[in-house]
Image (cartoon, rainbow, N blue to C red; front, side, top):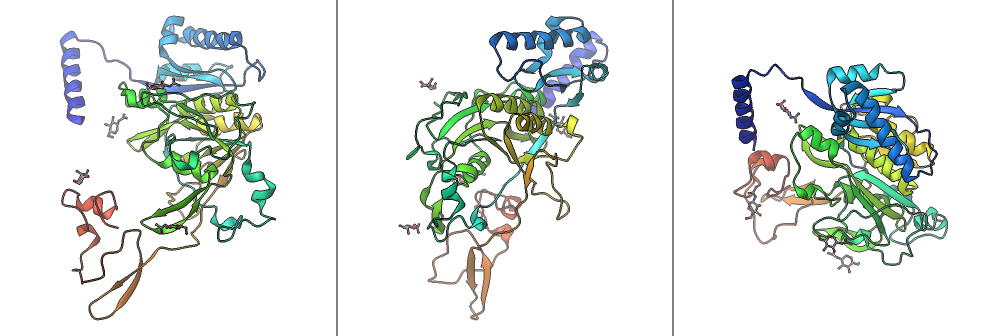
Length: 408
Ligand SMILES: *[C@@H]1O[C@H](CO)[C@@H](O)[C@H](O)[C@H]1NC(C)=O
Ligand SMILES: *[C@@H]1O[C@H](CO)[C@@H](O)[C@H](O)[C@H]1NC(C)=O
Ligand SMILES: *[C@@H]1O[C@H](CO)[C@@H](O)[C@H](O)[C@H]1NC(C)=O
Ligand SMILES: *[C@@H]1O[C@H](CO)[C@@H](O)[C@H](O)[C@H]1NC(C)=O
């Protein structure tokens, strides 16, 4: 793959040197943020066309023609957020930023996925029994609340998204279920799914395979965060028999909608601002009540940050935006997603551990933690290091990171 790209690049240089083309400016995807729209929350088709035209005319005044502008624009944010994402040269971006109509111009940057955990401390139930005064009862388990998430999509067939015991789709819902080649099934629980990949594709610099035109979660993070927020009750959930119990989200009867904005990482970036802003604009239109966003990056100026801008427009429209604080430090107290209109949640610790005992031949018993299946207890095994605990085709490096094919 990499070699393939390198050889194309070498060929390109060779062709360029043949024709003595002058040095060309490198283009990158930028977001031009224009604030709010003149139109109100009820948007007609005519309004949408007007906005698209105004974006291409505005950009055209810098690029020399409306046609060039239309080719450069990858997204027009038309409904709630006003702005567009476009492939531009640095100089063009700098020129556009000077225009009085423009709030900010910033690079379409990549962000990283986060993880949130856990409802277990919140005393909504005890040993699987829900107390009459539990907040869950008073909140009717989140019934008819619509929770959207911006993440890696969703595994629609997961039992957490079964619509058993869930009534008809709320009348206010205006979202869609974007189909794909595998047949993407929504239901009365998972009421919407959309994907946004143009910002990612512009960074990747190559056309995406057709499997990218799908809200399906091939990674797992989005299904995890969405089911943590609002998964239905699933009895007998366990890992090799460990942690066996009824899995459920914080609002088990809420409806959910997935907005897929995160894709396989390129240079450590997986969720791009241009896509994030398009997802916010769609989610506000669709009618979500809450947005859960477990991704982020280094804090930056709010006006140069698609997540802060998207969340701002969502909150302005009465949506609660809940973000993760991040897992990567570097300091114990480091948080991302710091805009004051976000509710940012930090995880601290767990209230359970998965104990495993190792007994040595001399009788010494050592307590540790493991999520693996116990070994048969009929004999002793040699002591090995973590790096050695792997299948023949896995690397020692994989073993140290507990990747598939290794033992942890
Ligand atoms: C979704 O796509 C699949 C596969 O192309 C197709 O079989 C199915 O009929 C489509 N469903 C809808 C609702 O369009
Ligand atoms: C990823 O990083 C490498 C090495 O820094 C760089 O050569 C490459 O252009 C980057 N890829 C993208 C898509 O930016
Ligand atoms: C999990 O618990 C349920 C209910 O107590 C039980 O029926 C089931 O066999 C358990 N599953 C495992 C793998 O332990
Ligand atoms: C290693 O072998 C297993 C079993 O044959 C296979 O499932 C797995 O994909 C292989 N892993 C790699 C990294 O080749």
